[in-house]
Image 1 (tube, rainbow, N blue to C red):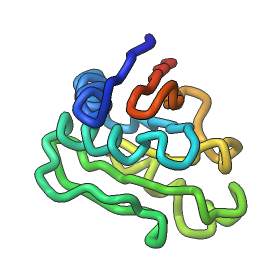
Image 2: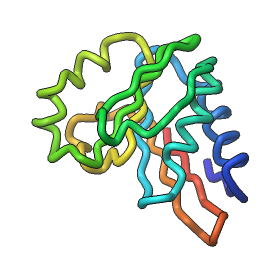
Image 3: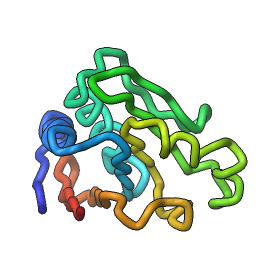
Image 4: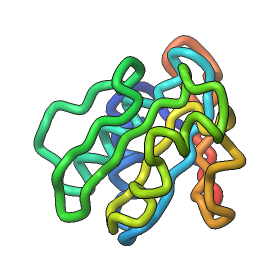
Length: 136
């Protein structure tokens, strides 16, 4: 599925729409450069899961947890050196907790992700426009 976004509202909407199709144990693997809109997409995903808390990038925390109709575990792999370090912080336990795992910079820990992860690539196509490709 390809979605074209004209700004933050559209990018959040795309996240909400994906959330409607998610299930316990789902993994969403986000890819895109700095400023592409990964956290904005995740904010929409969170809203679609019923999260009311403020959603922020977990760059320095590595993971943020949010309560909703399904728990959301929001990871940022930007500072992770690979799958081994990720497993050292208990990543596999999050996969078994019955929530949705959303991973920013997923390409940096691709070996740690399950083969059925839903891939989301966000590409900047202009100043405020993006192409969002969802592969499940």
